[in-house]
Image (cartoon, rainbow over all chains, first blue to last red):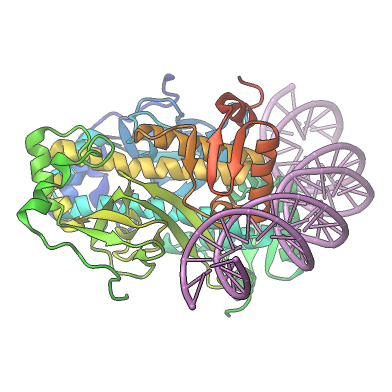
Length: 248
Length: 248
DNA sequence: CTGGCGCTTTGACGCAGATCAAACAGCTAC
DNA sequence: GTAGCTGTTTGATCTGCGTCAAAGCGCCAG
């Protein structure tokens, strides 16, 4: 447990109203597939917003679990720690994605969630969400899908870590980011990495030098253009070919 | 899609009755924490049992999703495949554990589930489970915990794959198996591996030879005794020390 | 009993990625 | 501006695990 590092925005009529029904992310986030009246109900469960500054924790391993969070804006990473200090980044979350589901199992968070840029989340108190999913069938089903999607995503990461080589991992990582930017209406081919080489390395089971070398190699091959955190994808099919040599 | 390889046991009064309320696994499985009347209701949702012979699939990637499964007896592995044939074992499941939650997200299974010995599962049609979890609050909450536990477990596997060395991975694997056998009333220190070195290797992101060498090394160190698939754990604290050198 | 097959063990060698090290780029504070 | 810090790049070298190969074990079929 620790004291929150950020203030909650007071629950006013306007902040409630500004929740799901007006949200540009509703096609990506929890309201997906709900009818207007159902979204209004969901709005009432979304208690408040919370701003998290770059570098601050949204929650830490060991914190009591009370709510899940929808990323409203910004960028997060989640990681787990070993006693000896080694850590493993388990994911990067962007707008519309849900954070905190690790906490449901033992009513305590088991990983850390850190903002990689100034961010804002919608706080969804879990007991209220459960109440609502008992009443709204489509919300229930969608929430189950969100949890299941997280499991499927984790399997993909296991595949990366267990069966792919360094450059394949980085190619898969870039293509995945690109896909997620497309879904949010951003450029698929040009973006700014919010995380360091070390964080990418931790996520991909590689050392930061290996990540850096792989970026440089992709640049030499003309697949991408790298300047520090600025990435331009020049040859999307080429990256896919790296991932799966026989097909394509 | 493929045609089922196993017959369902017909739904008779006795098979229904024999479901959750009489089941020796109810303290590990979905009925955990439910009252007797609630368990009776759950019984009615558990449609049937299904036997799966060693080597047969419970489901395959691409199969339509209709139900989740509780392992009644036996042992399973789940794996995901890459187009080029590489595969990644994502988990091993034993009695009382739930299989198939990967299928919820896109209504299609995304991994394969194969019996490693002659096994039996309880088939829990998912729409009926959702219906029931809308009615029974404690079942709803417990089901959410089961899904969340799977996410937490996956994070642990990422930690294994991304941040630990070969012998640490194998030590963690053995300790995890041992823990799960304890919970089922079996010996914690002596057991029979149901999976091959290759399957262990795939799960741990290692080649089968590396797994074999690590087993031999543990044997030499007096930590365990290995004879093919028969394992005796001689020095549990020693294995833990391998995992976390500074502590202990 | 015997042959064959799947799985495991062990050895010799090679390489992808880790480690160590140094220079460099970009940002913030003053 | 410039000092200092954090993060990145690149080179040289090392090593843990992979690869290749061969022998051994245990089980089943005939």
